[in-house]
Length: 90
Image (cartoon, rainbow, N blue to C red; front, side):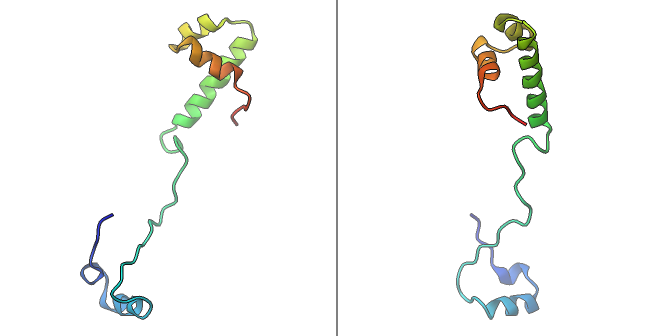
């Protein structure tokens, strides 16, 4: 974590107000933005959920593991993990 001197970046009035609460000690100020789930911004999560759903549908329609692996460019073991997973994604 990078150390920054508050006197160099905060307005003097705000600095005096903060000094009423804490003075001469390190203070951590967290980022204001909330952390988003993996793939939420790029759309990756939606892509994989839709792909996996399509793989499951094709499997239950009778397509073999080998054909699914070939069609989606994945290994047989990856297709099996997608098809046989117990918890279904939403």
